Structure formats: C-alpha cells, structure tokens
Image 1 (cartoon, helix red, strand yellow):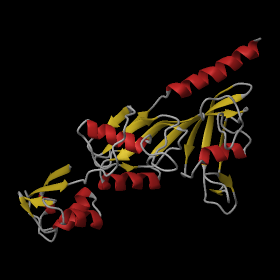
Image 2 (spheres, rainbow, N blue to C red):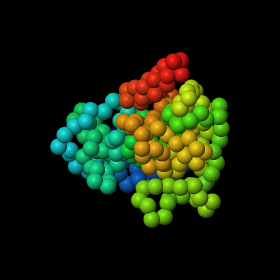
Image 3 (tube, helix red, strand yellow):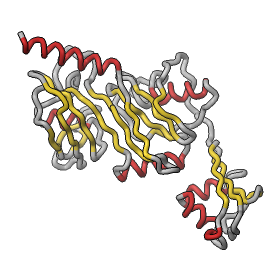
Image 4 (cartoon, rainbow, N blue to C red):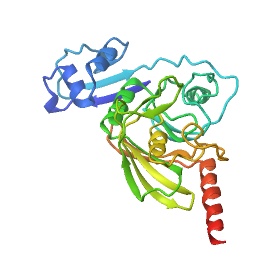
Length: 303
C-alpha cells in the first residue's frame, strides 16, 4: 500500500481536485480513475471525495494506492538475492549471471522475478512488482523493479526519455579503438530462436563504448545504450569484429565460464521527489574473469 498526503495551499484554491492531482502529483487520467474507484483511494479532510470537488486552501488530501498481491507461485526453494537499494516505490537487486529474468522457456521457480517476489513475501513486504527493463539470462548486474503501477509508469517514462541510464562493463576479444559509437539497426534473425542480427530494415540501435583497459587479446569496455534492443551490446560488438568473451551465440567457443557482460551502474531520478539516484554493483564472477584474463595475459606479455 502506498500513501501520499498533501495540504492545499492558497494557490490551489478553487481548482478541481482532478486538476490538482494532475498538477501536484503528475497523475494521469487513468491513474486518477483507478484511485477514484478504489475504496479510500481519494480522501479530502478524512472523507472520500469526488474528483470534481473544488479545493479550498488548507484541505488535507490523502491518496491511498492499494496494490493487489502478487499471483506468482511460491517456489519450492529460495535463492537469496542481494538488495542494492529500496524505498516505498522501487527496489533494485543484483541479478547473477545464469539466472533468467522472467519465467519462460523452461524456467519458472529459478527466475529473478519469482525469487525476488518470494523473498519479499518471506520478509512480510510482498507486493506485485513491475520490472523496469530487463537483463539477458547470462548478464549479471542491476535489475530495477517498481512496487506499484504509478512508480512503474514514471520509471518507464524516464527509460523512454533517456533519463534512466544503465552503464555496462564487458570484456571483448581483441584490441578495440579507445572509444566509439555503433549505430547499426538490429532485428530478429529469421528462423532462429532468440537470436538477433544486423539488418538495414531492423530497429534503430545505438551503442557507445570506451576502452578502460586492454591487452594483446582482450579489451575491458564501458558501454552505454541509447536504445534497448535484445542482445544489443553483443550483436553490435560482434559486428565490429570484437565479440564478447563467453558469448556462445555471437562469439567463440572459449573457456570462459560465463558471458563477460555486467550491468555495472544505474542512474535515474526518484519517481516522486526528483532526487538523483546512482547505484553501482559488482559481481564476483565477473571480477574473477577480469583478473583471470588480464593478469594472465600481462604475465605472458612480460615473458
């Protein structure tokens, strides 16, 4: 349950309540309608109130969003998840490499969505979660969920407008340029399940990268996306001759134990107070891969 309170000011006087809710809370018509038909959803001075009510200075306005419980099944086992940040409107967690994000294709109980739902229920904080973006099964890093539809709508708007930015780190084969931008369109590969390709008729996709460290055989990259296409980083890096280490679909059959791609940083605004939130995340297996590949190659270069 999410609750907002506001005391009307002199400048709010004689406005329709619906106008005030839109101006002060940035609620959409659909969100106001949902609150209107929910018991206790919109109250003024302790009483349920119509949205055509004329606001008076000093009116105490209370909004209560009753979020329905999750309908996900309880898993027979629990995978503890590391919570990176949480408030009343959202939660960010670490997703390990190898864990599917949502149920599907033979995965249900072992997915991030189901396990996080279960963990919050066990702690007495269960609610229906709304994913804001997603990560591929083999990618590790920060995963963001909204705790109610209004928060989800605002975070998705930030994602659409480029205000919610995710920064990745990856290990690619070969020596890449110091920095670059890849802007080739991507589409699903015809006749192949869960595989993408560069195609002139695909959807626009832009990836910017910077080389943080390099060796004879690998480059450690930092990347940002201006679009969010499936497998975008993996397809774009392969297209310039630098596929990611551990990528069995777009790269080589190598000895890497995992895909060398990690969602390292997330920057966005709190959906209600506009505070800038910056989160970073580390993954033990990704850090171990960096040490293994670069320290080994450094030793070989000095021999």
